[in-house]
Image (cartoon, rainbow, N blue to C red; front, side, top):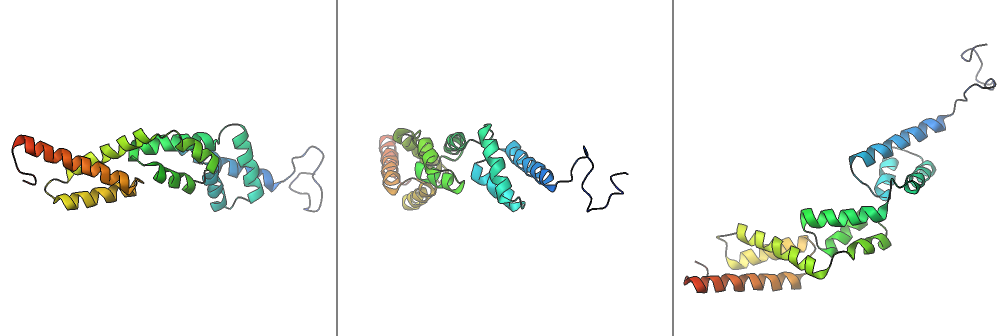
Length: 189
């Protein structure tokens, strides 16, 4: 009797492969995870969301995520470190904005705190100074108050506090005034 001619009520023959939809669902879920991880590193939370969007059953998703974590394909601590490094270098974000980004990606507080501890105050101030100088140079011809307001807003969007922004702007304005004084031209010309 061929497997096709058996009725649905009959059990499969000895040695025949059982028809089980679960391995198919698992292989689809694995493929989703691997595809997500091939594109870029992701947090466990992001991967869980991707599986949920594709309709993968929660128990299966948890089991696969646990296995991927166990074998090192998912590492939220390393992901947090990488995210902090890359966002600081590419976007110049301060700790406050980085913390918000880590929360949005679903990183646990413990891993987030470890990653944020790698950012020291001096490096953060230097990043703010570079961002400010770039913005200041690109806004020539504007009134100093307008330049300052726009610079403070830009630094705030990047997560820098108003105290630091104000101090750095004062330093920049003072340096600009000193240059103008040294060159003999009045400030604002």
